[in-house]
Length: 142
Image 1 (cartoon, helix red, strand yellow):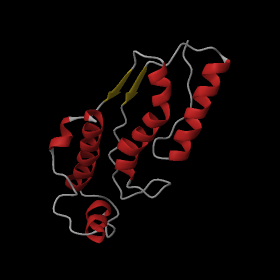
Image 2 (image 1 turned 180 degrees about the vertical axis):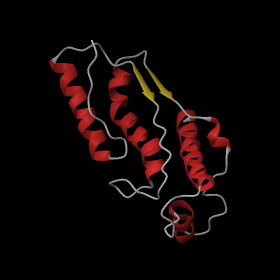
Image 3 (image 1 turned 45 degrees about the horizontal axis):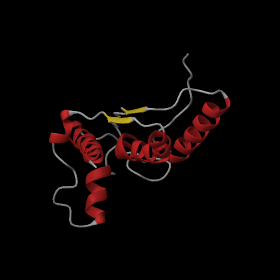
Image 4 (image 1 turned 90 degrees about the horizontal axis):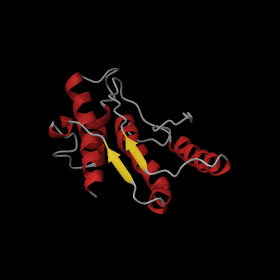
């Protein structure tokens, strides 16, 4: 049986709604225990953008959304041991990291958002993506 629930990882309110609905439906419909969570978002934004909570869209979707989702589901996963969390990254985390050599928040914002442009240069977009994938790798190692 396949059940689909709505989840927008770029919106932490959506993550909260999803985990609440998952818990309610799982209990009401007697679903099998949750034993595996696969984190697999890979958004490469073409334009500077932020999430509903003001986080850079790539990092907010690819890492922060996953992090919050995992934290909210961790008690359920622990209660259903053995359980696994699988974090999918890519070799993009070996690429340029946009936070390298950043001295202050203004410089970081300049490097992350490129506010003077309507579209991110491909190299910059890949750097932002690579940084979010590095966050995935660091989270998985934690």
